[in-house]
Image 1 (spheres, one colour):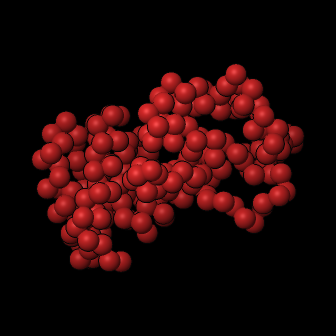
Image 2: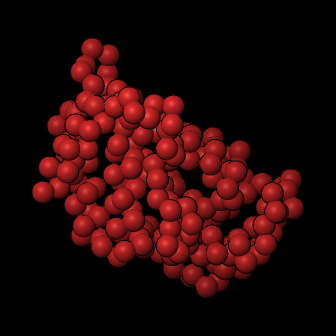
Amino acid sequence: MRYSESEIERVLRVGFELARGRRGKLTSVDKANVLETSRLWRATATRLADEYPDVELEHALVDACAMQIVLRPASYDVIVAENTFGDILTDEAAILAASMGLLPSEAGARTPGFYEPIHGTAPDIAGQGIANPCGSILSAAMMLRYSLGLTEEAAAVDRAVQTVLEQGYRTADIATAGDAATGTTQMGDLVANAIG
């Protein structure tokens, strides 16, 4: 767990900028009571906060944040953390949405950015036609919004996914007992048609 101040600053700046464009709240997650790298993380976040007076910065220890994500998920907007903590927290948060297949993610601090569903590539179910493509589709919407600046197009993709889910279509990971599951290709086609 080695981080330089410049690496930490790069990631934190992305968090501050995201928070600035959303609700204006950034939660910086660390384990500053135990880890030296986390103390550097916290000090860097505190220093950068002066450059973003319109963003409320709060610090949270990773274990407390993990608990609060389950108890009060809406109290968070943008969370920024080092890789290990972020990986654990995103998997935990995905369960709140009922499936890891529903959530998009981005890594690489948008230069140019790397977008994928929170679950990654899911090689264990590759080729079976049961993967939920919504996380991948919503990751593409994030790319449109954050890397390409195409906010209207991103919103259209977001709305299409929402529309298809509201119509009751479900892949196997989110289908309720007794309901027919929609396959990967069909779900993707439904979303594509909803965009048009």
